[in-house]
Image (cartoon, one colour):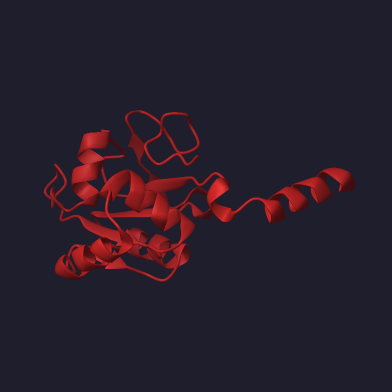
Length: 149
């Protein structure tokens, strides 16, 4: 067991962070009746092209640090823009996109705001939120929109 841990530690030191798999999850508040969306719907929600859920609830997008590895995955797969372009978008959409400092803050904000949607590292998820299926898939499943490397 010690040998396996040592090997994993060494591999982690030798590989640049962008080589390690990143997986992020789409979350929403527990009361949201839309725990599943299509990729197309999700992209519209996160890009603020769709500003309300089918129930009529206003959508607010909560994100963690866009310059983190998880944030870069989101920018690459969803927004398809640079960090600088995203920062301009976030400023122009400040009532719809809220940048917070950590996954814990995103989890708390999403749990407390009906209609909220957030993006967090899959290992940060807790019972206060609902994980949204995308195209019938959950995070860590092959084919999930925000499945890393």
